[in-house]
Image 1 (cartoon, rainbow, N blue to C red):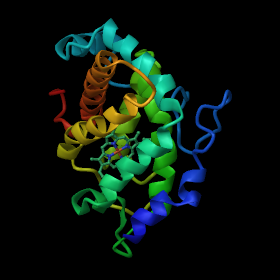
Image 2 (cartoon, rainbow, N blue to C red):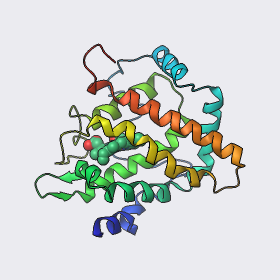
Image 3 (tube, rainbow, N blue to C red):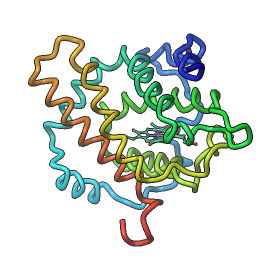
Image 4 (cartoon, helix red, strand yellow):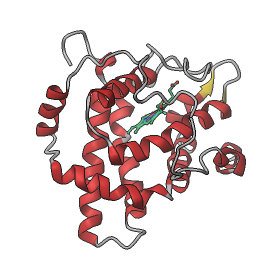
Length: 218
Ligand code: HEM
Protein backbone atom coordinates (compact mmCIF):
# COMPACT_ATOMS: atom_id res chain seq x y z
CA UNK A 1 0.00 0.00 0.00
CA UNK A 2 1.46 3.35 -1.01
CA UNK A 3 0.51 5.10 2.23
CA UNK A 4 2.37 2.49 4.22
CA UNK A 5 5.40 3.02 1.99
CA UNK A 6 5.15 6.76 2.61
CA UNK A 7 4.97 6.23 6.35
CA UNK A 8 8.01 4.00 6.28
CA UNK A 9 9.98 6.27 3.96
CA UNK A 10 13.15 8.04 5.03
CA UNK A 11 11.41 11.41 4.70
CA UNK A 12 8.65 10.40 7.07
CA UNK A 13 11.11 8.86 9.51
CA UNK A 14 13.86 11.47 9.36
CA UNK A 15 11.99 13.89 11.55
CA UNK A 16 12.42 11.75 14.64
CA UNK A 17 15.96 10.62 13.90
CA UNK A 18 17.41 12.49 16.86
CA UNK A 19 15.35 10.71 19.54
CA UNK A 20 17.58 10.13 22.53
CA UNK A 21 19.80 13.17 21.96
CA UNK A 22 20.82 15.08 25.08
CA UNK A 23 18.78 18.17 24.12
CA UNK A 24 15.60 16.98 22.43
CA UNK A 25 14.58 19.00 19.36
CA UNK A 26 11.53 21.23 19.52
CA UNK A 27 8.55 19.33 18.12
CA UNK A 28 5.74 21.44 16.64
CA UNK A 29 2.63 21.15 18.78
CA UNK A 30 4.36 19.31 21.63
CA UNK A 31 3.20 21.31 24.65
CA UNK A 32 3.93 19.25 27.77
CA UNK A 33 4.77 21.80 30.49
CA UNK A 34 3.63 24.81 28.43
CA UNK A 35 2.04 27.62 30.45
CA UNK A 36 -0.62 27.97 27.76
CA UNK A 37 -2.21 24.60 28.54
CA UNK A 38 -5.62 24.64 30.19
CA UNK A 39 -5.53 23.19 33.72
CA UNK A 40 -6.82 19.63 33.80
CA UNK A 41 -10.17 19.15 35.52
CA UNK A 42 -8.61 16.37 37.63
CA UNK A 43 -5.97 16.55 40.37
CA UNK A 44 -2.95 14.55 41.51
CA UNK A 45 -5.20 13.12 44.28
CA UNK A 46 -7.73 11.99 41.65
CA UNK A 47 -4.86 10.35 39.78
CA UNK A 48 -3.68 8.52 42.92
CA UNK A 49 -7.19 7.10 43.38
CA UNK A 50 -7.34 6.03 39.73
CA UNK A 51 -3.93 4.37 40.04
CA UNK A 52 -5.21 2.40 43.05
CA UNK A 53 -8.15 1.16 41.00
CA UNK A 54 -5.76 0.12 38.19
CA UNK A 55 -3.37 -1.69 40.61
CA UNK A 56 -0.74 0.75 39.34
CA UNK A 57 2.01 0.86 41.98
CA UNK A 58 5.53 2.17 42.54
CA UNK A 59 6.78 -1.11 41.03
CA UNK A 60 5.03 -0.12 37.79
CA UNK A 61 6.63 3.33 37.90
CA UNK A 62 10.04 1.68 38.22
CA UNK A 63 9.30 -0.85 35.45
CA UNK A 64 8.28 1.99 33.13
CA UNK A 65 11.48 3.88 33.98
CA UNK A 66 13.51 0.75 33.18
CA UNK A 67 11.81 0.57 29.79
CA UNK A 68 13.02 4.03 28.74
CA UNK A 69 16.64 3.24 27.80
CA UNK A 70 15.39 0.06 26.10
CA UNK A 71 12.86 1.91 23.95
CA UNK A 72 14.84 5.10 23.36
CA UNK A 73 16.69 3.88 20.27
CA UNK A 74 13.69 1.96 18.93
CA UNK A 75 10.95 4.59 18.71
CA UNK A 76 11.11 4.74 14.90
CA UNK A 77 10.76 0.98 14.57
CA UNK A 78 7.89 0.95 17.10
CA UNK A 79 6.10 3.73 15.23
CA UNK A 80 6.54 1.84 11.95
CA UNK A 81 4.57 -1.03 13.51
CA UNK A 82 1.88 1.19 15.06
CA UNK A 83 1.44 3.32 11.95
CA UNK A 84 1.45 0.15 9.83
CA UNK A 85 -1.47 -1.10 11.92
CA UNK A 86 -3.42 2.15 11.51
CA UNK A 87 -2.65 2.29 7.77
CA UNK A 88 -3.88 -1.29 7.34
CA UNK A 89 -7.09 -0.68 9.32
CA UNK A 90 -9.55 1.47 7.31
CA UNK A 91 -11.75 1.94 10.43
CA UNK A 92 -8.81 3.79 12.04
CA UNK A 93 -7.21 5.40 9.00
CA UNK A 94 -10.39 7.40 8.47
CA UNK A 95 -9.41 9.60 11.42
CA UNK A 96 -6.35 10.75 9.47
CA UNK A 97 -8.20 11.16 6.16
CA UNK A 98 -8.56 14.59 4.55
CA UNK A 99 -12.31 15.01 4.22
CA UNK A 100 -11.81 17.23 1.14
CA UNK A 101 -9.93 14.61 -0.88
CA UNK A 102 -10.99 11.38 0.83
CA UNK A 103 -7.29 10.44 1.01
CA UNK A 104 -5.02 9.97 4.06
CA UNK A 105 -3.30 13.23 4.96
CA UNK A 106 0.42 12.37 4.93
CA UNK A 107 1.51 15.65 6.52
CA UNK A 108 -0.98 15.22 9.37
CA UNK A 109 0.22 11.65 9.94
CA UNK A 110 3.85 12.76 9.94
CA UNK A 111 3.23 15.69 12.33
CA UNK A 112 1.42 13.48 14.84
CA UNK A 113 4.12 10.83 14.49
CA UNK A 114 6.81 13.25 15.73
CA UNK A 115 4.84 13.91 18.92
CA UNK A 116 3.98 10.24 19.31
CA UNK A 117 7.71 9.38 19.49
CA UNK A 118 8.10 11.82 22.38
CA UNK A 119 4.97 10.39 24.02
CA UNK A 120 6.60 6.94 24.15
CA UNK A 121 9.51 8.31 26.17
CA UNK A 122 7.23 10.48 28.31
CA UNK A 123 5.10 7.46 29.17
CA UNK A 124 8.29 5.76 30.37
CA UNK A 125 9.49 8.66 32.55
CA UNK A 126 6.22 10.43 33.49
CA UNK A 127 6.27 12.39 36.76
CA UNK A 128 2.51 12.13 37.34
CA UNK A 129 2.36 15.73 38.55
CA UNK A 130 -0.18 18.43 37.65
CA UNK A 131 1.82 19.43 34.53
CA UNK A 132 1.61 15.83 33.30
CA UNK A 133 -2.14 15.80 34.04
CA UNK A 134 -2.63 19.08 32.15
CA UNK A 135 -0.84 17.52 29.16
CA UNK A 136 -3.04 14.39 29.40
CA UNK A 137 -6.12 16.61 29.34
CA UNK A 138 -4.78 18.38 26.24
CA UNK A 139 -4.12 15.06 24.45
CA UNK A 140 -7.73 14.05 25.20
CA UNK A 141 -9.01 17.34 23.78
CA UNK A 142 -6.92 16.79 20.65
CA UNK A 143 -8.65 13.44 20.00
CA UNK A 144 -12.06 15.00 20.75
CA UNK A 145 -14.00 17.43 18.59
CA UNK A 146 -12.94 20.20 21.03
CA UNK A 147 -9.47 20.42 19.49
CA UNK A 148 -8.89 17.71 16.87
CA UNK A 149 -7.13 19.00 13.72
CA UNK A 150 -6.28 22.38 15.27
CA UNK A 151 -2.65 21.73 16.17
CA UNK A 152 -1.67 20.75 12.63
CA UNK A 153 -4.30 22.72 10.69
CA UNK A 154 -5.64 19.43 9.34
CA UNK A 155 -8.96 18.93 7.53
CA UNK A 156 -9.84 15.52 8.87
CA UNK A 157 -12.67 13.87 10.79
CA UNK A 158 -14.10 15.99 13.60
CA UNK A 159 -13.13 13.53 16.32
CA UNK A 160 -11.69 10.11 17.09
CA UNK A 161 -14.63 8.13 18.46
CA UNK A 162 -13.95 7.33 22.07
CA UNK A 163 -14.45 3.58 21.83
CA UNK A 164 -11.24 3.22 19.85
CA UNK A 165 -9.05 5.06 22.36
CA UNK A 166 -9.18 2.46 25.13
CA UNK A 167 -9.35 -0.36 22.54
CA UNK A 168 -5.98 0.65 21.13
CA UNK A 169 -4.35 -0.08 24.49
CA UNK A 170 -4.23 -3.71 23.33
CA UNK A 171 -2.49 -3.42 19.92
CA UNK A 172 -0.19 -0.67 21.22
CA UNK A 173 1.07 -2.69 24.18
CA UNK A 174 0.98 -6.12 22.49
CA UNK A 175 3.18 -4.92 19.64
CA UNK A 176 5.48 -3.12 22.11
CA UNK A 177 6.39 -6.32 23.96
CA UNK A 178 8.97 -7.66 21.47
CA UNK A 179 10.75 -4.28 21.58
CA UNK A 180 10.93 -4.52 25.39
CA UNK A 181 12.57 -7.94 25.01
CA UNK A 182 15.19 -6.83 22.50
CA UNK A 183 17.90 -5.49 24.81
CA UNK A 184 18.64 -8.44 27.06
CA UNK A 185 16.03 -8.00 29.82
CA UNK A 186 15.01 -11.24 31.55
CA UNK A 187 11.55 -12.69 30.73
CA UNK A 188 10.35 -11.61 34.21
CA UNK A 189 11.55 -8.05 33.61
CA UNK A 190 9.86 -7.98 30.21
CA UNK A 191 6.59 -9.18 31.80
CA UNK A 192 6.82 -6.48 34.48
CA UNK A 193 7.53 -3.72 31.94
CA UNK A 194 4.75 -4.93 29.67
CA UNK A 195 2.22 -5.06 32.52
CA UNK A 196 3.20 -1.53 33.56
CA UNK A 197 2.80 -0.29 29.98
CA UNK A 198 -0.70 -1.84 29.72
CA UNK A 199 -1.74 -0.10 32.93
CA UNK A 200 -0.22 3.23 31.93
CA UNK A 201 -1.75 3.32 28.44
CA UNK A 202 -5.17 2.33 29.80
CA UNK A 203 -4.79 4.98 32.52
CA UNK A 204 -3.97 7.63 29.93
CA UNK A 205 -6.89 6.76 27.67
CA UNK A 206 -9.14 7.01 30.75
CA UNK A 207 -7.75 10.52 31.44
CA UNK A 208 -8.28 11.39 27.76
CA UNK A 209 -11.96 10.37 28.05
CA UNK A 210 -12.84 13.48 30.07
CA UNK A 211 -14.27 15.59 27.22
CA UNK A 212 -16.24 12.58 25.95
CA UNK A 213 -18.00 11.87 29.26
CA UNK A 214 -21.17 13.73 30.26
CA UNK A 215 -20.62 16.69 32.55
CA UNK A 216 -20.02 15.59 36.11
CA UNK A 217 -19.85 11.88 35.29
CA UNK A 218 -16.09 11.41 34.81
C1 HEM B 1 -3.91 3.74 23.14
C2 HEM B 1 -4.50 4.57 22.30
C3 HEM B 1 -3.83 5.79 21.74
C4 HEM B 1 -2.65 6.38 22.01
C5 HEM B 1 -1.59 5.93 23.00
C6 HEM B 1 -2.56 7.57 21.18
C7 HEM B 1 -1.52 8.47 21.22
C8 HEM B 1 -1.52 9.67 20.57
C9 HEM B 1 -0.55 10.70 20.74
C10 HEM B 1 0.65 10.61 21.66
C11 HEM B 1 -0.92 11.73 19.97
C12 HEM B 1 -0.20 13.07 19.81
C13 HEM B 1 -0.72 14.01 20.86
C14 HEM B 1 -0.01 15.33 20.68
O1 HEM B 1 1.15 15.40 21.11
O2 HEM B 1 -0.59 16.22 20.05
C15 HEM B 1 -2.10 11.37 19.27
C16 HEM B 1 -2.79 12.14 18.39
C17 HEM B 1 -3.72 11.63 17.52
N1 HEM B 1 -4.23 10.36 17.55
FE1 HEM B 1 -3.99 9.06 19.02
N2 HEM B 1 -3.66 7.65 20.41
C18 HEM B 1 -4.45 6.58 20.69
C19 HEM B 1 -5.64 6.28 20.08
C20 HEM B 1 -5.97 6.77 18.85
C21 HEM B 1 -6.92 6.19 17.94
C22 HEM B 1 -7.77 4.94 18.17
C23 HEM B 1 -6.93 6.96 16.84
C24 HEM B 1 -7.70 6.73 15.57
C25 HEM B 1 -7.05 6.51 14.45
C26 HEM B 1 -6.02 8.06 17.07
C27 HEM B 1 -5.79 9.09 16.20
C28 HEM B 1 -5.09 10.22 16.51
C29 HEM B 1 -5.16 11.45 15.78
C30 HEM B 1 -6.00 11.72 14.54
C31 HEM B 1 -4.30 12.35 16.42
C32 HEM B 1 -4.08 13.81 16.06
C33 HEM B 1 -5.10 14.64 16.83
C34 HEM B 1 -4.98 16.12 16.48
O3 HEM B 1 -5.60 16.52 15.48
O4 HEM B 1 -4.30 16.87 17.20
N3 HEM B 1 -5.45 7.90 18.30
N4 HEM B 1 -2.45 10.09 19.66
